[in-house]
Length: 283
Figure 1 (cartoon, helix red, strand yellow):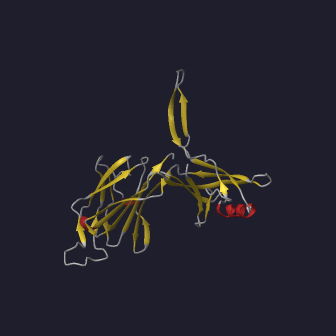
Figure 2: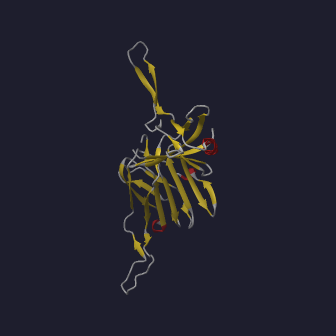
Figure 3: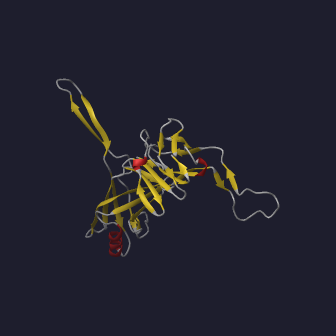
């Protein structure tokens, strides 16, 4: 089976553990399956059975055993140490013929057997975020006017569009992974009280107040990283206090999702961009 495995640190340095010709070779990866759930129960007093307190998934542990082959093993060992450093950030890229994903974590250990006939080692990575994310980004946009002008210009006298007026206020995006949050960017303006509705459930998110021309509001609905940020004239401010009471941190259900945009004023001036990566508990 074809697969690749690349590790990248916070500075962008990479090491490819999928090379098999006189480089590295790994035969398996532990941590591709859904992580083990933690279940807490309590016994009934004087009764059979027990009741559930809570159940959750704590973290993912990715373990990569590997071997080094060929010449210059010592040089390649130090090359590995420069990228994979204990207690430091690491990004894991894993791909097969049908899927390309990444996970982010912290290096727990990077161990090597230096005095064996075959140099081997093992890397352990702890991922607080339990998901594998698709390397491809999906984007759904709402804008009343979408640009259509492009080069090369037509070489005849026939009319051609320089913009398309949008009569729909719906954004559609397909989620092929698990139910997760997403990133929402609201820009344009001037406008007032922008609201995003889930067309299926009628759940909504509304930001109170004015959006000035040039403002960019970025909303993240991901569990553990829920934020509402305003960038105005280069200054980023936390405006989570402007989230209207009754708003829901919207998620993407598996399958097709539809959202529509409203505003109490200036809807035609708004541009809304929904950014999503498929997330998988196991790959």
